[in-house]
Length: 313
Image (cartoon, rainbow, N blue to C red):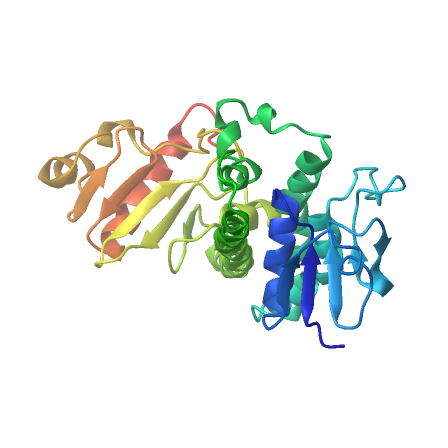
């Protein structure tokens, strides 16, 4: 069936129907978006999808509302918003529109649901308050979408429709960027996993470019890895530590303390490595002019870490 009309409620708007419009609008770019509470619009019809209005949840009829008494619930009992329902039914097709490999779809769909869709469901249904974000509350996506509404004394009906369209366009940028990052994260995991295998028993992980790599290290159980080297734009190379935990900055091993805060000739003299260029004073990253130089620095850092009286990892 060709979808020709996307229908949601008129009046003030919230993150859930704005984000639902982002998903459905990509899948049905030629469809007209109608905002109305007219009973003739918010009922089933050929070529029509209705969301966040309509008084029922009936996928077969094309209605995805969550305001009714028997509102739809997730498996854990969390109430859905219209965004959650739309993502549940149309999220995989939305992801396919980005040419994401079929084998990655389920994982990305579930991860996006947990990290992006669920919080919108929770805020929209009041099970979580935006205020729980503390001083950052107004900077959450639902909070920012609220700020796009016309001010109270702007009574021009066109202002509300223009504001809704603007909110959809802005939200679209965030959704598409988040999906792109999720897909890129999966690609990075595959590249990093290959690099971990190539490292073997070495304590040094060499990556072909900067990318998220810690998940691949953890999944492989590669506790012996202490440092990572990566080429940088312009021909330089970087040497960095590997964080012990997802949160915080504690590393499995620090770079040699004698290098901290040095650069250029001074760092070359202290490290004994020609081409050493910089070491951060916090001992988590250093740079050199070539792969050979960064490998020398990495090997020195490993040797010092392994001489440490306490285990580095």
